[in-house]
Amino acid sequence: MKSVQVLGATVFLLLAILLTAFVFMAAALPPDSALPSGGDHPGLLPWALMTVFCLALVESALHLLRAYLALDEDNLRLGERARPSRGAALYRRLAVLAGVSGAMVLMVGAAAFAGILVAVLSSGRLRLSAPVMVMAGMTLVYGALRPMVVRGLGRLSRVVGQASRGALPNYVLENDGIRLDLKLQNLGSREKREVWIGFEELEEVRVLTWREADTARRYGLDPGVAGRHVSDLYRYLKGEMERPRTYVAQLSSGGVALFLRGPEVLYLLTVGREDASDLLEAFEKHRAR
Image (tube, rainbow, N blue to C red; front, side, top):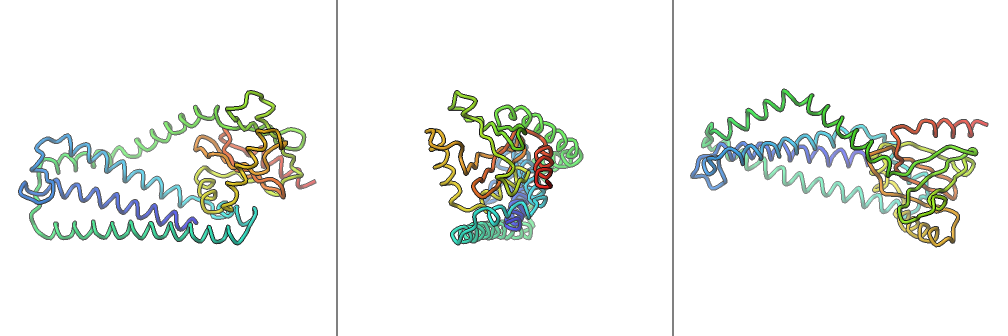
């Protein structure tokens, strides 16, 4: 699963770099070229905007690649320990095959881009136009300021994440277990939004990053989990269950993800916290008794 994600991010980065090179090439073409060129657009604003777009695309691809390289492979195999089945194994194989196929399609596109670039570069028709100089200057300035920009974006992301944590589920530790406030907005009763799970009911407690949880949900969990989640939540809201046995909520990058598994319990959700080490410590103490 990690290798598929890394492959996809690598191909995305390659395409972003080739697109940037393609835009530079177009800016350097003479006005009589069959492709859009710098001579067709004497104004510099469109080329400056394209430069910003390409730099943002490359930066996004780099961010994705770093995030996928940092994935903990063991945290992506939740489904193998949860409720394995032949259907789940088949689903994972199909998901991996789809990911690899998508990456191959992108690689074909990248090869086509590269072929066009080589053909144009070998034609000897490129020139140093004003758009090329503006784009090169913007790229050099961004390269010099990039560490500062990346740190600033990181701080902004943390501020946005902290602001969104109040709307995310949360938990408190009590009575040798965990009480989860699911923050179900359509329920007026706080008691109804909260569920309690005793540590004796759990075999595994994990804290995951948002990227690990999202990847594990898409590739690692039994595909039947989604159906059980909907069914259990419907019965819970009707009052037919004390709590959902399976609960896989929408994940968010604003907190940390919890994976709670037991013979009759499977929960995967994001909680509005930066750290959940107290939960891990409490669970380990319970198991050590």
